[in-house]
Length: 326
Image (tube, rainbow, N blue to C red; front, side, top):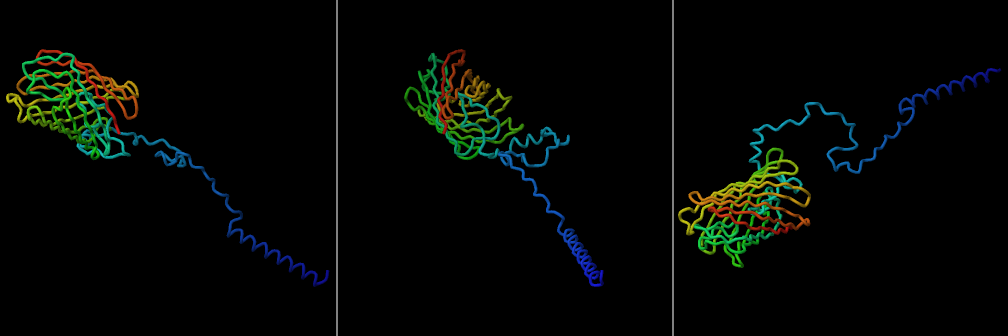
């Protein structure tokens, strides 16, 4: 092998060595191979609809400190007077049926824009006479007649003017005559006990067309959900008649207590007790078992047959209320 051949071989070896060294350096700078593409996890159809994201990290059991603790009593008492707020346009507090005889102005926690019209009817089975005028839940204590009408009824409209505030206008009638004008307002104070309790106030102004008497009434309202089936509704209040003929006992104490059992999605059974007493004088009690039937999403009817006790007289009467919600 001559000198030129050896020189060519050594030159080729050096060039190959240099090329290999440069190629290795390039791989070291850029990575020997491109990293594999990250695995794409398809989002669950409900991702974002629920609070839990299905693409989040695997679930780990929460520590024992994360177990919900009972709300302190002082916080519950403060919440009693915290105004209920809008939550996805849902009424705050428990869903408790309204009493049939002495109903609310829409349920407590009413939302702005809620509208309802209904008609309440009373049919006494016996038109009893009494020493003092008898109280009517529709036409009021008629001071000019000591005898109940054969049929009493009252169309009314209820409207949620603002969240937690509603108005009502009613025309009490007896046998086709408008006996009075009735206006009312209702305000929800707040909720407590994990929204199983709700309370508020209702004010009523009753103007009697037969004798010109004006009777304002103030009521405290409370509702409590006992369990998924049973619930309670209660009212207590005071009224005073101005300008009427009952000068000896113009003031009344009012008490309403109702227990309900929601036996199915469309049917609710209940019993309602209405107690009315003069501060110095007669008292009356109306005990009314009742059934509520929601036969469509917007229409419902309530009906019952109960007994009234006043001044030692007992009389049966039927009551109904037809309701249309909008």
